[in-house]
Length: 201
Ligand SMILES: CC(C)(COP(=O)(O)OP(=O)(O)OC[C@H]1O[C@@H](n2cnc3c(N)ncnc32)[C@H](O)[C@@H]1OP(=O)(O)O)[C@@H](O)C(=O)NCCC(=O)NCCS
Image (cartoon, rainbow, N blue to C red):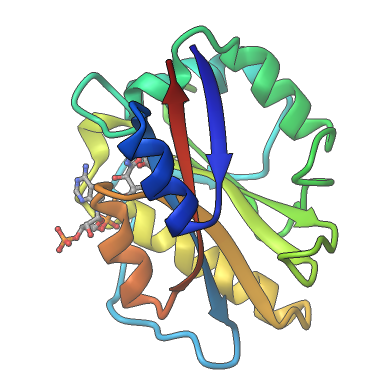
């Protein structure tokens, strides 16, 4: 098996018609910061503290796994991935997402120090499909705190900090089927590109 990746719906249809198996369909979304909506008043669940990021990649990997359990649409994409290494690379600004932007990024801990949530914002360099500027490679809230306004608050913080820094847009990727998309759309994010990941026999 090898994995094909395409942004072309006709090519995806052809691959699927010839025995390919869809592993993931993901959309890149963008919000224009001068037109972003602030839909609700979000709040962090009580007892959680917002702070700056540190370099605790192992704890971040554990917490992010706890946010994307077996019921999550992205559960399978992490199979075989060394998540602590992935986080170390993100925090070090290595790889395609670029250096971390510290002001819009936030790490949330419980009073005992356990990681409860995070939003990481990076300065993605310009590419053929992205004009450059802030990108959210990771946003999560651990399962026990989901649905209580924390993710919305982190998004609100990231949007506000990027707007204050003079950025024009903010992007992220979301898999189709992830309910997080509803939250993003409420802030005014809209899709501009899709990626099909197809396993070929
Ligand atoms: C997406 C996520 C960060 C949102 O944080 P949250 O604190 O649960 O969200 P809030 O309480 O601020 O807002 C609730 C909205 O978030 C969305 N949402 C996504 N996943 C959710 C979940 N598991 N539980 C509740 N709401 C969720 C929904 O749109 C929901 O509102 P709705 O039910 O009225 O449509 C969080 O649910 C999470 O970590 N999910 C797993 C990891 C993930 O998918 N990250 C995003 C990758 S692109």
